[in-house]
Image (cartoon, rainbow, N blue to C red; front, side, top):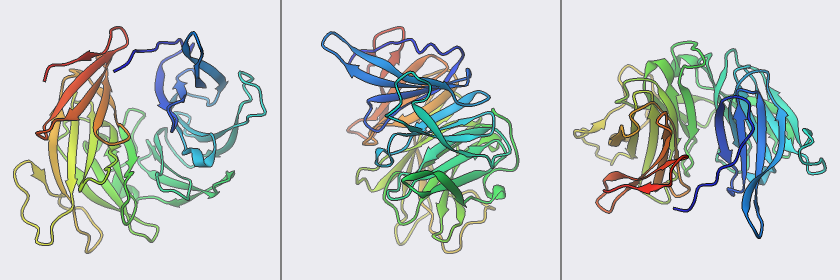
Length: 347
């Protein structure tokens, strides 16, 4: 662990999200003050600071999330808001910093009939795709017609609403999404199901349709966030969830053997009475860890680049780090507070 760097964002309202770029050298922050702010990490002889690149009014309501696209597509940010819009922004290096013109709006996605609660760029290279999750109960997947031209996007596919959510929700619905970042035959994503409680995996069939797959059970209240871990050649997948019920949970997904057996205690089969794609084989789902150390609502979970350390943040004002030991048991390795130094915890 290193030191904590504090800086004043000068946002005038609640900050809903912050996101690092691919290299960890830039930040974007978004707030209920309807502004986006981009920050550059600057290393000087006397100090290392976060320097503001630009700040601008981006939406007409609270901005809930902002994310970076992969740098192969340039310096691109997507943002979503309670105003039902998703906007695509691109940096204009010819414009001066702090001019409020440095980041140009290239496109706006307007199909949502409710607040847009979560967004995620696809990890698949060669195509710039963006998934959005809205309070109207629909996941929409967009693709730029040309990755070098951000002014034209189209909806490529979406799961049928009845297979994702029962119906529209509100801005506190708890809907959330994340793509599988690992190489698989066809794309997959995990979706937090809002008021239905829990999360479910969805698979693309290769023909512009998505099908519901395995259900991640055990949650007692809404899932606020989901994060699919990079596998780094592991033979299994890991998914983490953050829940309103104060728990961080880690699920292990294993491909079934040719002669699959009935899951043992601690494993779960897909929920019954769900229409899956015919002939689809299901992964075994095992809840390998659950922690309530936050003792408060947990809002975010995210894996490191190797999928070996999980971070979580909650209403207790702490970021907690989790790691599996050599015995395979997941434990909290540290807790970080903005008001205190990072502290390693006894195992």
